[in-house]
Image (cartoon, rainbow, N blue to C red; front, side, top):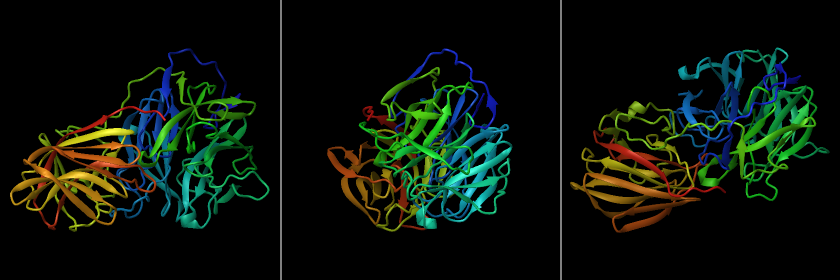
Length: 509
């Protein structure tokens, strides 16, 4: 008998033969940061960090771990005040588990605490349940149920609490509604003198298997670290450790935070889904083969990431569509950089999406501007285009398309003295600047291109510019729209439609 990751005993049965799904890494070239993946029956679900973007904590679904579709967000609001833009803060590295017929999502906020959301039916969304740890400095929580008791293992944020490279644990009630431990216990120190060093250890995923308590956790830093596996007989340790995945002689830097998931109910076949940092593209998703052998799990091929593989799962047809017509439809992949109602400046119609003009200083940066409708970029080299009807803009107002980050670049249409003029826009995070490209009518298609790592191509007519963009600290670049005014109560607006996202070429690196 072996113990499954939810702590329940079950026999190991040979897996049935089925058509496999081939994949090449990365399987998702989009910033689904800090992925946590579970299997429920024949379905896989993934959650990821959303940081300061709202709604928060996306949930994806797949049948084969390679092709994914959007399901829902865990919450429209986080705990605390996020009505202003707080880059890099918000929801960090959530975990998702299914226990006794319910989905539990633990959402850490490094400045507020660790919070629990629960759902009996993902189609109906999640409900807020509890706060298990209040205060600054806690991240990356993961629950586990062992012999009718429940625990949460987590890591620490040095910038908030003064230390890191350690893992903590608290006991909680089995329904995760409240904590039992008065104080947390430190269960592992990645910098303890005289032991194998695992500095910056974080992102713990804890599970029980074959009578052991395992914790998989990345160490050594996001860009260049490795994946460590801890093994003990208690969630409190002590633990033996083993490095189970690292870059070695491959091109795949820093195989970082992720989740070990069983591929069927036999618990005999596994995969490890994790992210790899790709600068402006964000944290992209990779899959490694995983095997349980001689009391330990082995990830990848001889402990290093693979470029391709085959999963013993039937290929499915889930997909993520980053384009949107806006003609009576609105993609759920769009988010705002703070917690404001979409209705504050957006209205959907059959002719397109009405975006109302909002006030901003003449040269003020867009970085902290709350009214930016945006979604993640999703490829190494892409083109973006959108049709804008600007006949209802007021004098001096502008509507545009841009790549957003700590440095943003884009293209816009501005109404000036009853004329419509096109400009390139460059925003260094402190102020905006423009260059004139040409005249247009009130209805125009604006477009731009992105090439990894940071090149933004702007062209209108015979005029072109090569600009650049830089991501926020923890999240990749976003693409989206803005309508700006120098007046507080403008009645101006622009109508957006036919937003198109196209991959210029595919790449696996």
